[in-house]
Image 1 (cartoon, rainbow, N blue to C red):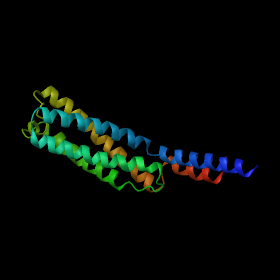
Image 2 (cartoon, helix red, strand yellow):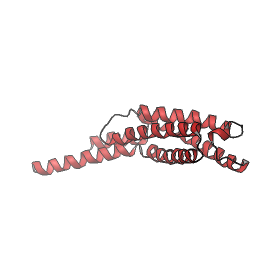
Image 3 (cartoon, one colour):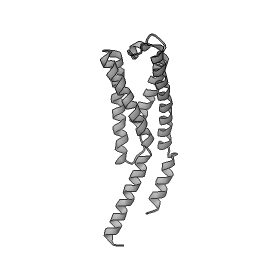
Image 4 (cartoon, rainbow, N blue to C red):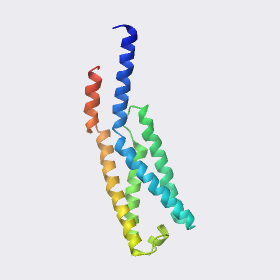
Length: 165
């Protein structure tokens, strides 16, 4: 093999390792996209209903998720497994969803969700919030596994790095 071929093989190998490493965050990115659009829709509705409290809360969650999303995208270039902003966001979203779910059936719920006119709408919002709670727990567990090297990709990355292909 010539030096040019070896260099090309090294670049291919490095790109493969980078891709495998980036793939370990795929589920987190998908859930982040779902939360991003959910919070964005809530923000739009809150603004349409001219509800300051809901606009501030949904806007804050939206901006925090944007910051967490930038952190996730940076994993293409940064090899460490630290996801402190993403973890903080999902912890905050988990707590918020629990509070929001409880408030769906309380008078305070109409302040958070001004478009919640009937019990049927409250049931739909409650269901979405429960899905968000379960999703947040799942993502926090995934982040913990990645940070501790217990995810399925950790072994694959080590094996692939040690075997030049």
